[in-house]
Amino acid sequence: MFNVITNKWKLTFLAVIVTVCYSHAAYSEETILVGGVEVILPPAEVIYSHGNPYPGGVKLVNFDIDGKGPVATVKPGQEMSVVTDYFYAQPNVADDIINQIIVGYDGIGAQACIFYAVRVHGLYYDMHDGSHVTSGTAHFKLTAPQDPGIYEIRFRYAMDFTPEEAIEKWWNVGGPPTEEATIAILIVQ
Image (cartoon, rainbow, N blue to C red; front, side):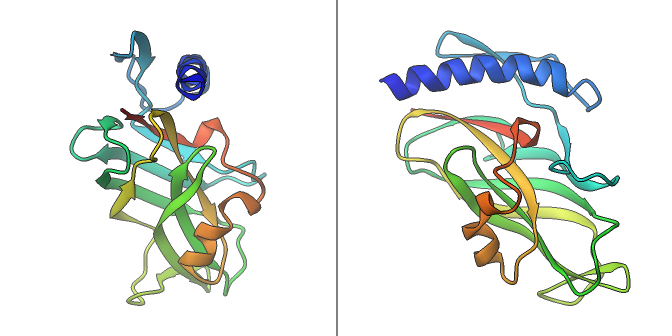
């Protein structure tokens, strides 16, 4: 019960942060009522560079959980189908570096790798098929946490050898993704 109350407070706090931090984004003032708490919907577009001093970063747009948009209510342990558009622009990354975009839950960790490419001569090439890629649409699965509560879904870039290593080291690449990387809200009940 305490975890649920804490998560509700966190969600209220998140609503204030979203109002302040996302004035530059394609942001909607729409709200929904979740467990008696009015929640501001996450922005449709989030650009996140995790404190990098150069322009660029990772951008996710139109994050959709099971056709419900960026806010969904699910059962504990439920598997969800997720779709999002992504854009990857890290201009100061050295060649021969493998890059990923990873998605997961704040406070829990990464769940999925949605972009896996290597930089060669300033261009990114998909590690699966070798095609040139900097943007696309990712279709992937997330599994809801087992404990009821309200969870922030966040994303970040990673630079690891495999997607599995990037997922495992989610918190070790410059620290956890901050609230600026929140792209969706999951209500587990």
